[in-house]
Image (tube, rainbow, N blue to C red; front, side, top):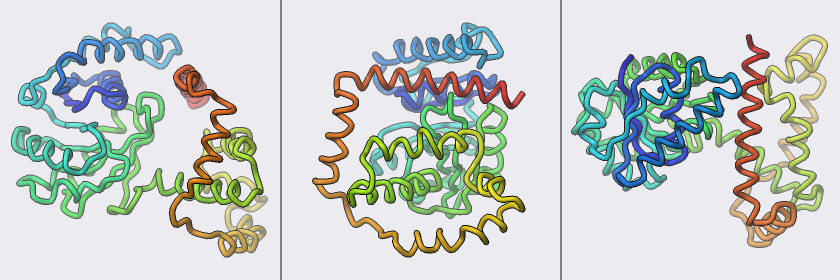
Length: 310
């Protein structure tokens, strides 16, 4: 299979390495800090072992890990790559500098994709000689367990680049969606942001505690959203489908929309309330343990979803 270069060996870069190696591709995991790379590869191996233990890997972990190499030489990492997935910090200046180097060093037909959560590709690729091969491929963290990846083209991204990136993501087991252009927050964070906006209003206005607000999703909405989207949810929640649902409940949703208010910042009082409630529930020194629990839970859910889809 073809060679994919992963730029940045942090959590997301390592998870992308798992995605592409699991999908049969040779991977070079690059980081400018050579000393962090051996441990990064070990962590990739540990993830593969956990996936295998939950029947989420079709090959022996060691065999998949053989496809993952490490390098602190960018030229070497890019040599022969068909796709580059960048995962550096969310700072425009850093991305401009890196993509200028990627554009200079990578073969002209190599796709250059960024994992950025919200910076449009036009902000850091406009002046590149081969800017038409650049786009955003934003995963949901961690991509090895949550398959959605949203593809957002810059105004100059070639349609063929977008198409082949979508095909590559589907080939390695991801669930790609394509946006029709750049928009603040893309799709995932716009939807999450809309929910958070309403959640903050309900908390700030005294309608719900922080703990009960989380239960609305964890013990309510999230149960269905784990395996179906909101449009399919409402389509199945009325006798005659989505039109019937909106005929019945549309006036209520219009009333909600009319009563909602946009946020213009986040007060210190709100942030104090959120932080205090979370630290009462989860002391700061237990956060790492809870994050590990979350990741184990995600593995279990991914395994269940795979079995249910078989």
